[in-house]
Image 1 (cartoon, one colour):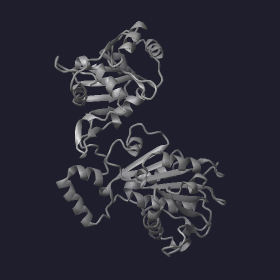
Image 2 (cartoon, rainbow, N blue to C red):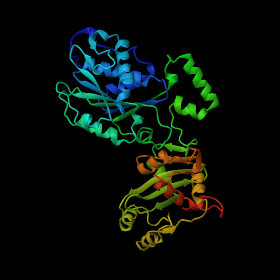
Image 3 (spheres, rainbow, N blue to C red):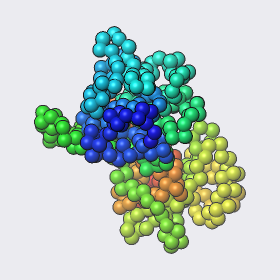
Image 4 (cartoon, rainbow, N blue to C red):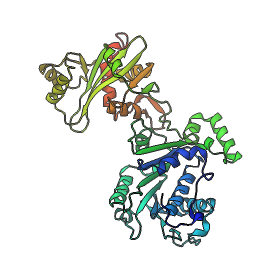
Length: 431
């Protein structure tokens, strides 16, 4: 890394200044392959402290600016700015920085030798961010503190695109977006769905931490955490360990995400197929599974998952894969589609219907020893099974039925295994 001023005292080091648990995050922040650095977890884990130190370090070691964003600007001065000033003092470089101590003074922090700055903006002022540009040095680091406060992902995406527009003048510079937050309770929150997943893009690094990683927690905090663990374990898991607990019971804790080898696939001969209809908005979901009945494991082998997929196009894809000879159990809500698929040479049948059939089918899947999914083979199926949560009543209590949203491949899977689900009284389909 090239230092803008050749003075040893300005070569700030984070060695001994950040907790060992955060060394992997530091390494990722220095790695050009990562665009997004995610620090999520429980309370008092030191994730924001670590990012603050990195932001200070980067201003002192590159000719670039940093930008700190919270959803509401009035929270910036007492939270992020105070955290960064603490980091300056913690790194023992306060003599090289300028800031105003006035409660109404300028928010910006300035590194005196080069004039690189850290700016602060609230996302409630979108016009200030849509056209973000600095005259002297580029802004390459953006920190979204309390990123879970953004209600939808679009709010962050718009800001990211504004920053990424300009080509950087130095090949040693790389854009970095930092996100720090405590995961929301609901698994279906956009930020949990994006970063609590086995399907992360290669340019994203996620670091999880909690108070157990921070040896500087006060004894009062530790005692409070232990009290909550003893009296309300679910709240402890969420607030102190930083785990989204959903409606209270985790659906499909039998999920196994791993590579399914070609040798395994070649040996699979107990095939099940299901289809959930969709077209304009909802996708059509066709799934193909293997059922290891002895070990009570199922393996996701393939999927056809698309919107605006006509029955003719679906049939063509099934024929191309040579799946048309295998019986497919499909949602009986569209008998004309089933008849059409039969006419196109695909073995389709109606899934059964019955009171309680949805709940029973979901329970059957949940009680399997393993649901094995290779995200490379069936990315949409993997995403649905990983993200789904239980419905709740008006008081927030869980209901023994999955959310009826983002569950097309799951429904198709229920149809696929209807004949494996037990006695005649066990009816599978859709209510």
